[in-house]
Amino acid sequence: QVQLVESGGGLVQAGGSLRLSCAASGRTSSTYARGWFRQAPGKEREFVAAISWSGGFKIYADSVKERFIISRDDDSNTVYLQMNSLKPEDTAVYYCAADQTLRSPGRLLDEYGYWGQGTQVTVSS
Image 1 (spheres, helix red, strand yellow):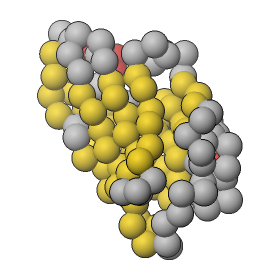
Image 2 (image 1 turned 90 degrees about the vertical axis):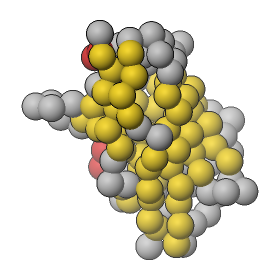
Image 3 (image 1 turned 45 degrees about the vertical axis):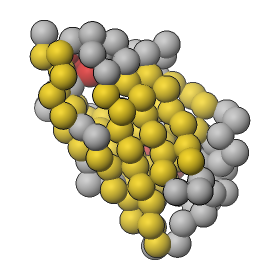
Image 4 (image 1 turned 45 degrees about the horizontal axis):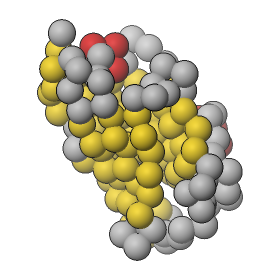
């Protein structure tokens, strides 16, 4: 089992920045990919960004490309999402995800077997 805990969410004005963290515990390993997803009120959960097990391959949703940066620190089993130039449409609950069978970053929800509880990000206009 792997437990994931997100932190770093909050309220920020448009144009501002936030950094989300996702700490893993339990049967952790540096050899699997990690991802970030988000869910806005009344909408389905959607892909945001993901990073390969090595950290050398990263993918992003078109809506956040050039603004968000995903990174990982395997010494602390933590994945980060640096969010810059935030927009009101970025408002959502952000979830981190992992799967012990995934090496390459995935965009699909069902590729991930472990999920955090989510952290709220609210961007005011």
